Image (tube, rainbow, N blue to C red):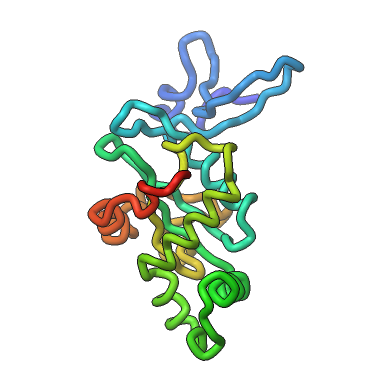
Amino acid sequence: MFTHYYKNPEETAKAVDADGWFSTGDVAQVTNDGWFIIIDRVKNFFKLAQGEYVTPEKIENLYLTSNSLLTQAYAHGDFTNSYLVGVVGVDPNAIKSFLKQRMNFTDGDLADEEKILEICNRRETRVQILLHMNSNVGSKLNGFEKLHNIYVEFEPLRLDREVITPTSKLRRPIAYKYFKKQLDAMYKEGSIVKDIKL
């Protein structure tokens, strides 16, 4: 199926061992029935300060499938911190309904997208959004896998920002650089749900 990368001996040497075995870079689980489940890419794994390994793609997918508010998710963490933070994209109509029903905002308060985002990024609103998100994920994630702070936009992961590929795959190193200011601010602020059961 695969012998080498075209005109790229360096990458071929990294991926194919002396016996001809190709390392895909995927982490997989074999089920009792013999099925392979791809969990994530090895290069996407990272370790948190307390030593737990995290697979961000699994976390992002669970948040997206469990929360109709969300359209995009980028989970971030590193070895210097003990919890995850995230950049999330919200559906404009769903977030308006959420803010009206859960936080008693009016149509006048939510007149334009700029005002909605300003409200969404207030601490008290982020707490409510994050509690809702974490509640919907429930026990599918361990406490250290859940987000503890978020930054909200309508479509943060866009091709013109170069944080995703043309096939919508997240480019983590570039996303980290692009959102560094927001990520640093979230860690400086700390966990906004630490005293609330996740």
